[in-house]
Length: 262
Image (tube, rainbow, N blue to C red; front, side, top):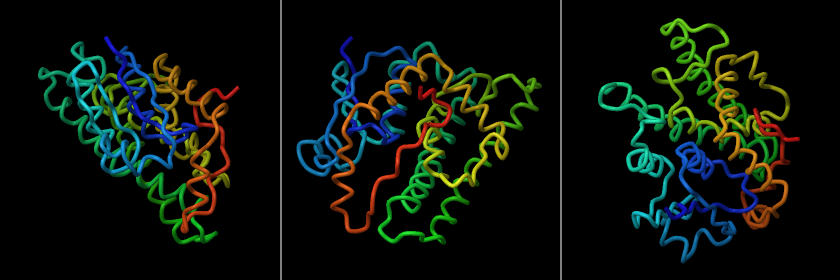
């Protein structure tokens, strides 16, 4: 089987491509990252792969399929390659199979945009200390975490799990819907650099859930590779930000939540 290509930009801090890579690794599929400078993603030839000019795009040479948008890519990978139902459910658990889609869409429409805007206004926006925006997106980010927290708590009660047992968004196993949240979760240190979030205290189920995912061998392998890329690659994203009229600077790299950065 040929490697499935995932497009990303140096130095790899952008979270969305890692969502796809985690699913690939968890499914045991061969993958490779095609590194493309941020300055080239808004023009050809990349926009032939992703007309939105964002990251990632995926090229599967085994099926001659090119896709963009992480939700579409994850759905494709699971439908095409997860025949053993490692990260999903089958028609024998029909409701749970489709409930996973609600959580994947919630990650894409809720967690990603709200976390991203919190980082933007905290660190990057040209007008500094725009506190109303920082507060708004900080509150929305915490609301998103609260939705997950409440669901995990209900799942623990429903399944009669002990406090140290892993609990998941849907059913009784980790699925692609859970894993989709991991890369953005790792940025919580950058999102709340002032210590205004104590994740373990404010959202204990969410915190344990994230640690249970980052401890999985496949996910851990990907996140360790991500850390290596961030440490070793030059950040071309800084060059692009320096040319944007509404941007100031990229945030200082903070230790990824739940990842061994040693």
